[in-house]
Length: 165
Figure 1 (cartoon, rainbow, N blue to C red):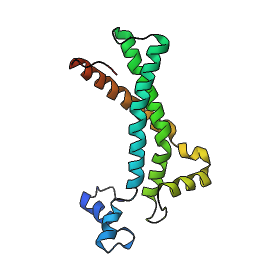
Figure 2 (figure 1 turned 90 degrees about the horizontal axis):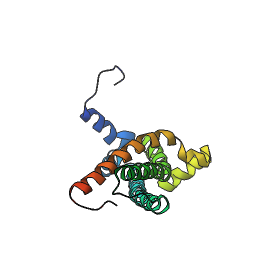
Figure 3 (figure 1 turned 45 degrees about the vertical axis):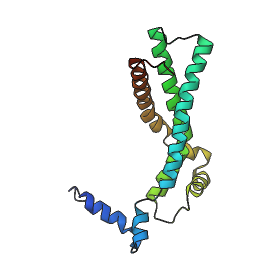
Figure 4 (figure 1 turned 135 degrees about the vertical axis):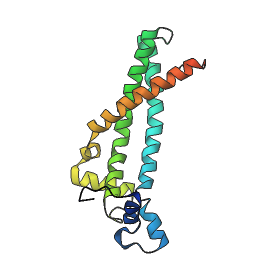
């Protein structure tokens, strides 16, 4: 709280549940799920972008640079470049949804009718680049995660005898 004393989960849950004068079960329930549709859109963008970019980057590097998975330095170079590319693409495609989700979830209920309304509002108030506000921080968070995720995943595939992507 404001006094520096940590508040319990139940205090936070009660504040969320009864925010903006919610009295009915539906209003209370809905308060916990504000912004969920935007989160689902964002998750779809992330899922589609991450794997497709990783796979396509590895394919192109093999084709144009002749890198092979059989040679350790080339295998790790493939994984590194493809992971960083996937992280960049993921940040580029999900940043607008991340920003829309943030303003929906931090605004009073009813301020935005949904994802599209939030996106239009961002563009009107900050311009098209407003959709990418915080991009560097997003990429700085996603790139290391993608590196670890894909490196571990590829190593596990190798250990169980599966061929690399």
